[in-house]
Every structure is written in C-alpha cells, then in structure tokens.
Image (tube, rainbow, N blue to C red; front, side, top):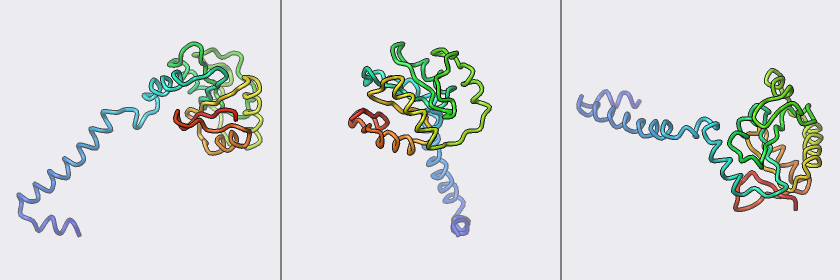
Length: 172
C-alpha cells in the first residue's frame, strides 16, 4: 500500500521520501556504531568493574557467570576483588588450578560442555560459595538465568541493595 502511494508521487517527492528514510536510519546506525557496549558486553567491562570497585564492601563476592567470563572480568577488577565463576553448576568446588586471569581445568572443560539449569545444583553451588567465602553481599554479572538466582538470594535471606545497582544483594 505504501509503495503504491510513493510510486504515485512525482520523482522529486520520491527522492525526498527516500532521503528522509535514509537519514532516519543513519541516526540509529551512528548511535549503535558509536557505542560498542550496546551490542557487546565485553566493551562494558571497565564500566561495570568501576561501579563494583567503588561500591564493594568487605565480605562481598562477585559471581561472573561462566569460568571463561570470570578471567576476562578479573582483568579489569582491582587486585583485592576477585570474581568467581558460577557455571557450570555441576562443578561445586572452585577450580584450584585456575589463577586470577587464567582458566583452570574446569574453565577449559566447561567451554565444551552443554549446560542445564537445575534448581538442586544451583542451591548446592550457591550454599557452597556463600559458606566458603562467608559472603555478606553478592554481585551478579553475566549470568544466564538471573531470575532463578534472584529467587535463590531472596529465599536465603539476601535483599537487593537499593540506590547502588540492580544486581547487588546484601544479607539482611
């Protein structure tokens, strides 16, 4: 229908309509190209880690999704803050062969594994991490299923810290 209306316009009017259409797209494309953070979270790492660093409290832990995301994230964190990979859930212990900026056995193996989200495994892993690290606060970064983790945190006595960032939780 729109094409019939446009084709019935004089040639100069069609050129004007086409120019307006192209200009409207250019603005959107410039916004996307000028801000890589909009489509690739790797470009947002410095900003996210700056926010965590400025609001970090002793006793907080940073859960950074997969093991291979953890090493990227730790690169930007100050040395006194270290993130922990939550996934894969079936590896309950922390990989003792990994370093702050490298992957260990679990991190390398987990890239080849298929993952499933199991409530029991999430419960076991979260209880282990909270107890081992004596966590008073939890930062969530680059996790697949925020909803289940939010539910787990609320159910286990954590509350969202207001006016800081939407993905930080403190013990009540």
